[in-house]
Image 1: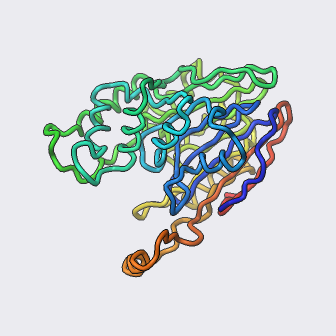
Image 2: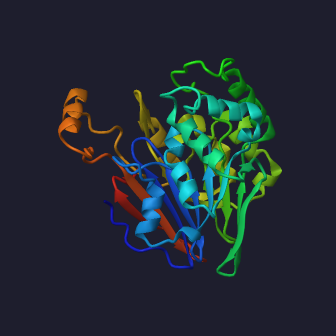
Length: 355
């Protein structure tokens, strides 16, 4: 187990990004022990959400979590989020405005094992979390997510996406994949590209700001271009720290974001993505990001989990319990800054390090 040390001081801002080779979660300290959790991934080899394990280790009570946001429905961003929603029962639960639509909700239900076994874990997690909550808040561009006062400053978190046009396109895409017969056996949730329904978050600490890029991609006049070109979004304070969108891929990159929404040489973090032969960020992605800032970090340098023959792994599971892979490539990048300070401190845990 990773030893994360102590928690932040009341007057410290904190952004901690967790990620193995597949998965992403973010814990944000807004000041005076007010926390926000964005997305979820699991500690490798367990069913424990990484952000909950972290908060419990540093002594944060459940009442300290004010909001839980599912930026989108993909499996690598919502594993364990139903556990978070149940454990932090007093926290507000929020997700993309796309899922306020009946067709999108039907999509989640269809691919949630409600009608058929063995389906996408991501849609199941989100569907379970939504069904367990009496109140769910839906986010879209210009939505106020959270407002509070900490360290005599008014902290404001707002959503910069998705736009109404992006929601409409995503809903139409979801609707096309809702099965006509609820009893049909569906093998897996379909691939849905580009990702336009993801929620980008801007955190204004007054005198400083953070941009969390989720997995938002760009497509024609939608996605990142619609964020940068929206005057309300463009008027948000520039950010000194940025969670790079879509695992650093070229599809999530939009140069005007760097030019218009971020400070020069911002501190940046990202998580890798490794699945079915696709590995992000690529060497080209890394070079592009390093050209934008000298302060670039990644939660795990592992491009994939250590390989093991399936038959060997099955045999080990037959003769032992709780078999876990050593060195699973899990890590975390933690950024902290005292309110009013100029520089972020950086700490690396597990497999995290420079990009």
